[in-house]
Length: 183
Image (cartoon, rainbow, N blue to C red; front, side, top):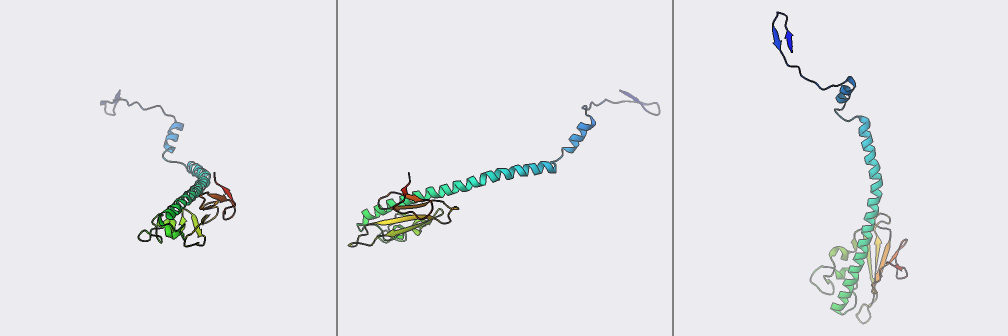
């Protein structure tokens, strides 16, 4: 392309091809530099809806995990009590702490449970150990209840086991030997 200048000089320039844009498209491209307030509000609303759906499910799964942990802990306590009875020949332990690790292994500290469980609180449940009276220096029976620390937050079921090894549950109060066994 030849351009004539004011004094009769000519200068050669190359025409640059620009993409075809209309005023509306150019305005849309200019506007797309960031997100609009409406777009951000929609994203926040979607995130809130998803969290409202997922948080109750998360809490339910946490309670189910606590309950499964309580059942597993009752099985561990039952196995520890049977082992204690076999090793020491004096029946079952007089207290849950006798199964813990508070010194050298012996009848007062058998080293069969970790100290967390031997203390009686684990994974949102409180474990209450009760032994029967000793007969000729032998404790013939025991019972263990697992109760949620805060009902409907750490668990919704109460559990019970004794020397039979059957784990039972109750939905509304502390479980006992008369309640239904878990399946």
